[in-house]
Image (cartoon, rainbow, N blue to C red):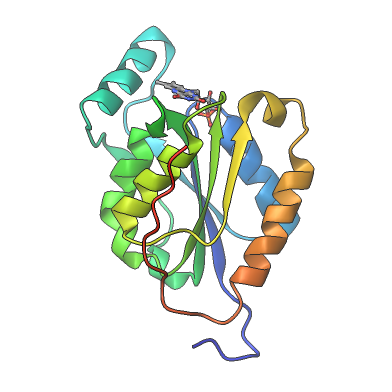
Length: 179
Ligand SMILES: Cc1cc2nc3c(=O)[nH]c(=O)nc-3n(C[C@H](O)[C@H](O)[C@H](O)COP(=O)(O)O)c2cc1C
């Protein structure tokens, strides 16, 4: 249990291939002061060959090599995962990262960025991998992020996290969500 005096330790971990998730992560980190950690591709996914590798990784269920210089996630009471949707599911680099860190996560929330569809399935992929459901979910369209129209939603999400990250409770059981 957290003592009443100690503020919950909250960290943000994001993967972003083309910058949308990074913009959301930057905004959330700036407005909250929560530390920000990036998952990077070991082999950058530039251009058409990068596109094709995204599709192949996703279709074949591959776990591509990633780089992560952040701390083990067990130092946090609550982790916010930010990821794009790929082929109506979880982007492969986040899946690869969670393979190594999922057991370290005590409680978590998810922000998915996408063109328009598949966010709930990506969240379901994460919940299945971690074996527990997220406290809060935010699905954002890339168009809205790039137009600067998601600041209010990110701010509300931050307030939800602060409310949910209060006293530590055992991680909640899995509840699948499919859109
Ligand atoms: C291989 C691939 C598959 C994608 N599949 C979907 C999809 O199924 N649904 C969707 O809404 N967007 C899809 N997208 C779009 C991305 O989710 C969207 O552009 C997102 O904002 C990218 O985030 P990022 O800039 O942080 O990498 C896909 C993108 C790629 C590269």
